[in-house]
Length: 95
Image (cartoon, rainbow, N blue to C red; front, side):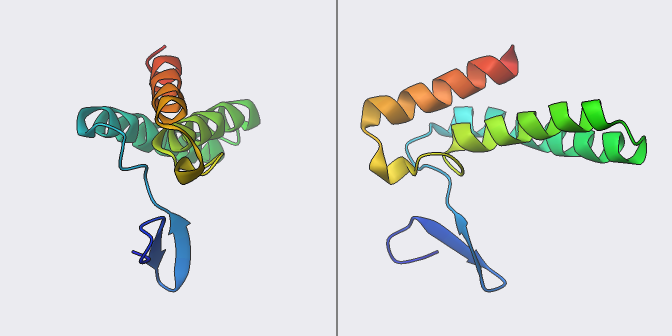
């Protein structure tokens, strides 16, 4: 992890860290959605189903935004904006 705790370094590459303000139970639920969506991407690619792949990739993106790993950097958001981000993302994924 970088000294500012904003990024994780894996194999020499920086990846944005998950927002530490996301409650652990919410983070766990979002990760379940993320991993399920990643599996759906693989299934859709093997089936050569472009529409299903697009939908699965959108779910991956939505989960990563909710976790703070994409979109506006979490350290640039207010506490209220951060909470709204993960609440909205979880509601959409729980759908």
